[in-house]
Image 1: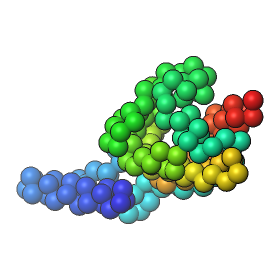
Image 2: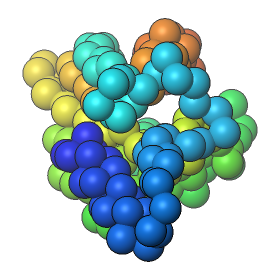
Image 3: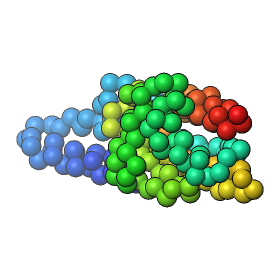
Amino acid sequence: MVAVFFQLARILQVHIEMSACSSPVVIQPVYDYAKISRKEVRKDGVMETKNLRQTATFNAGAKAVYELLMDAKKHSALAGGDTAIISRKVGGKFSIGGYIEGTNLELVPGQKIVQSWRYEDWPKGHYSKATFAFKEQDGRTKMTFTQVGIPARFYEDIKQGWIDYYWTPMKEIFDK
């Protein structure tokens, strides 16, 4: 969906530039963000992205895992004291420490969280889609996490960041 949007924006940009000038047109790339390199943009003008899938099992019920992620006070403690501002409504915004932000797209308490999600270093206006799905069995919860649309150059850092700053500390919290 994001790729389609940017392709459409590129077409509109070209059309506007061509209709506004009688002289030769210089077509600007869609991605003129300060922090994006030419290697990150495919020939069709779409930024290279990667998708992530991780699973983790926690010694807690699904509602407790959901609450740790969605309760601002608990999430702040998880984030090492970074201030978490989290709306509990679909369409509501969230921010973690001022460096992660997004919007809640779908919330099913104890079952699923779907968010648009971005890190401050990402190209301006680019969001990925993060999905946390919870499956409880025998008092433990298996979480399947997917993140679609991570800018390729940030993939390894994001992949390891979820493990280091979320899954490992969450396991430690629930193992107490």
